[in-house]
Image 1 (cartoon, rainbow, N blue to C red):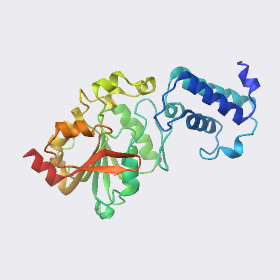
Image 2 (cartoon, rainbow, N blue to C red):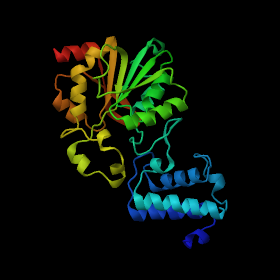
Image 3 (cartoon, rainbow, N blue to C red):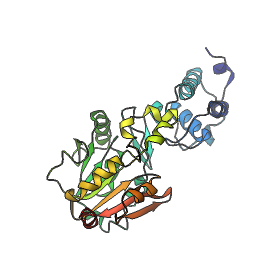
Image 4 (cartoon, rainbow, N blue to C red):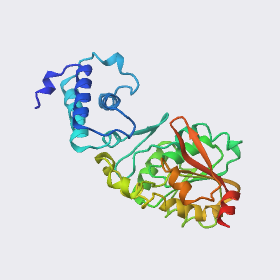
Length: 300
């Protein structure tokens, strides 16, 4: 048994040590936390089955030996395996929503979470009039679940090319008891959706450029490459989507696409695209919005 297990008594002791270990190891943070302290606190609280937002009352609590062993193990896994914390705990959060995750899907992180919490106001004037919605590249199904909550009258199709990802999405859909409203579809983008029309399509596609893929930190290399990389300029999926999406939207339908830091690449690749860039508190111009009419005009 590692001597540290006997030496460190309180949660405060273990938190200090974890922050030091994470910093010394040069871990990369970007899957829910952005610094060593927050990540260490989250992993320790989760391992001890304590509320994730209540650190202070427990800092001077003494850990039992089994608890010390469990905390030591998860901290060492984070350092030695460079696994994102979400894969160690099998959970990820978007706002107040908790989702199951494992290495079959990327860890949920999307600027759409904030927009869907606001029910896409002001672009969607009446959320109850959204009857059909589509979440392309659904992964864990997290955005489909948020869509179902935001638009109570909508039937939601959640699409992914990966059967493994859809297995994870099924678990999350079932956890939220939404199987009657969210339909999972295995499809390469829109190819298996012939004849369907949607009031709203959102897509958080792969958009990492080839050069960025080559430079990814080790934590990101545990995620499915299929869900990250999208060619030289990161727009391979976006090109296909913009070419076909108008045919899958209702007359007043909207398409929203997340492209991260790639606005300049989008503007360069589609100079005639009449889209609107959407800002959220966590980032500016990470998502663009375009109507069916504007899409059809660009295509013509």
